[in-house]
Image (cartoon, rainbow, N blue to C red):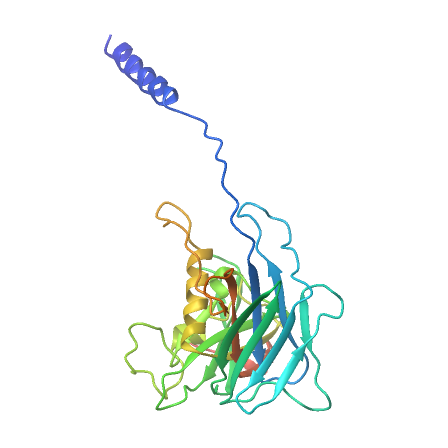
Length: 301
């Protein structure tokens, strides 16, 4: 009899839960189409590209449509103007150098101007200095404490620029392929973490967690080639990357409502259509190394 009542109670609860299930066919309103800007200019030689697209509905997984027929220029504070052309009508606006000319120069500020569909958008960014990467080493490690699979953990060395608050982004490539998962958006303030730094790491070697942040989940194998890039950022740019990572990884039981990542693309007309995306400039220093015996170290930590 006791088992009967327990079973009856369980079935009643299940039926009660099922009776509360309602299928909702949500019809989300589509917002206005906006210009989206992806512009990262550097001090490296070669062409530079600014990508313009149009925003699409939230649940639309197709490639965003290109924003074509725009006029795109970049002007530096030395008075030089760089014109970006979309020769193939794909939304990729490209500046081609003449000779050994480079667009980006440390210390200069760059103003982006986009004329598109009767609207004019502006953004600006300054190129801050960035330190060189001194070396990259590898240490043999297990993938996890309980794993029998071994690989090589990479670690790069660089020293923060002293006497200034510096912001960086670290990118890394495995055998020429950019590692671009959400957890590969790596940023740093003065070679340490942001928010609890308080100048402690100013002018010192990048801290261990930052130095070792350049590893894929599977570690590296013998003869893999690793390239590490160190990019200088402005305060606005590091905020953009950190909030982008937060929104990409915003999921699970404790997810918060998604929010728009801030943009520095401003319409000259305060009442005009808004834009999304970001325009930033960076100095870049890089270094490559292979997982070979000369670069392998024995470490206890």
